[in-house]
Amino acid sequence: MTTLKRVLCEQRLRHIPAQFSWIDQRLVFEGHLGRLDAHAAALYLFLLTVADAQGLSYWGDARVARLLGVTPVALARAREDLVRAGLIVYERPLYQVLALDATGLSAAAVHTAVLSAGTPAASSTSPAPAPTPAWASDPAPAAIDRDAVRARLAQLRARLSGGADGAHGHGKR
Image 1 (cartoon, rainbow, N blue to C red):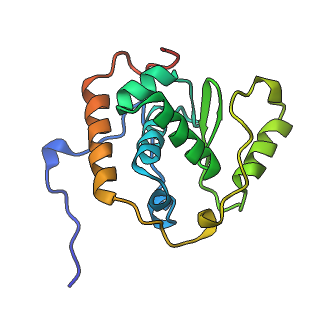
Image 2 (image 1 turned 45 degrees about the horizontal axis):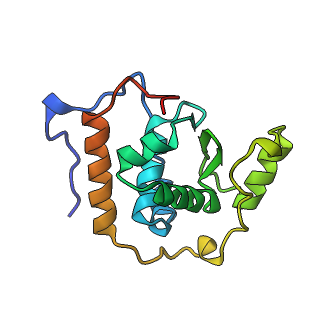
């Protein structure tokens, strides 16, 4: 039996707002999300939400940690997990969410490409990413607590929708 898709609530139909961002479905279908812990997944969702069209944002660590409800140490660990997974590049204070293109670029190759593009290495406070770990090329998602991820993402959604001060908060620390 095939499910017929139909709008269930016409009054709350989504429309694309001017500050639209997107989440690439390959994040789920290619197993990227399954390889992240709850903190890294929450940080990635946050970065996808606040990034501009080029994937760039520059939120301060203290504010991001407060919004996500994590310690600065947990934020740093989540950020490094995303860098190692090849999902973001970070050069304080800039984050860039990377395309999920199937180019086969490892995190180390992305870092090299960033440096060769003229980004001064001396200004980076983030160490060069480690080579892509073996698990990153494994198509089977790592065992994670999906309920914890869902709960954390729901908390993040609630904080962002209820506690946002300013339109985008770029640059506020």
